Image (tube, rainbow, N blue to C red; front, side, top):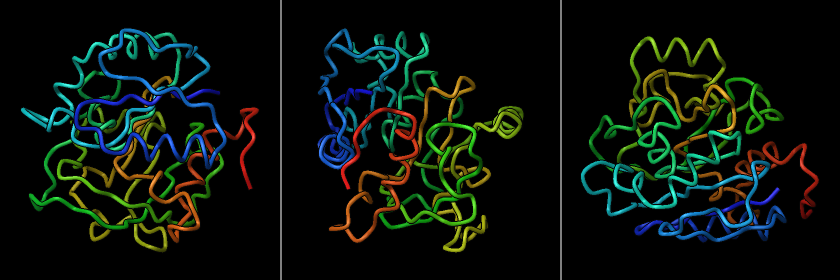
Length: 237
């Protein structure tokens, strides 16, 4: 599996993702610029990564301008044909704005930028991004966002729950989903979701910032390993 990492004006986690995928996970990575109209050599077996940052300075509404970058038409076609896409933080916002994921990311409930470690509960094992993860422990993953409060209407929430499209929820260190463990006021403590086809994934926390021993935390690497579990990709020890 190859990964294509898109850089938008204002992306600041693109090189982090490239490093982890290429040097930690041992994957082939293609660097893509937002003005391109195609995804290079990526096929529907491959994954487009939309990294974190502040695309277009978060002007107007987070992700709303990046959604109209030239490359997004190719991303839409890739996903509609069954190809994978994975958005982290600002990338999650862009996927929602593009209509590839339901819901919207709103300003944090405390109206402040939040940057800290939180804990994620694996809600189910229904998607490749969480298929090999334990549901009985919390994953310690950093967040860094000002507009990370996931919101959707009641009908959409019921559909997400019924279809096992909620991949991660905010929890405490012991894996308990509580109001106190919700850092931004997200509905139903939602930290990450997928589409009905299970080929498009979005999450606010940053697993790429918790994937190496030198950082003192490798819980994020478990998420990448889950995604690559059935792929013939050598993973460095």
